[in-house]
Amino acid sequence: MEKHQTYFNLLDALKEKGCPICNLAKKNIHMAMDSFLYERVNDPGARKEIRKSLGYCNTHAWQLQKFGDGFGLSIIFNELLGILNEKISRVASSEEKKEIQSPAQRIDRRQNKVELSGKGQNHLSYLQ
Image (cartoon, rainbow, N blue to C red; front, side, top):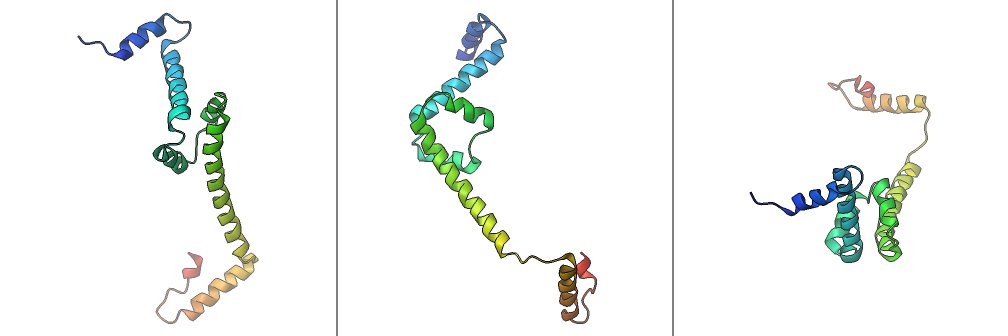
């Protein structure tokens, strides 16, 4: 039976204190983050995927911060903050464009649309 690297990693993890699976997971996360900050922070494909996902969860964002690579993190978070700023600006500008109306004004507007719609139309469509 052929033994893979994972088998040997597990044997090593069994020698350490605590859960061997948790220890392996922590080591793998640490290696992945270190590799990302060292090798892939300038990789356009990797950064595209990060932008698409809008970044990391709270836990992993703080774990990345602990590596102390301020330059790498600033590249990533500068892009993410730019994306979030654009999204917030779009929402804010669309909210400003909406006319503020009372509920009575909205119902009146809907009723006028129904009256203008002509014969053969569902005259209760404003309730939908």
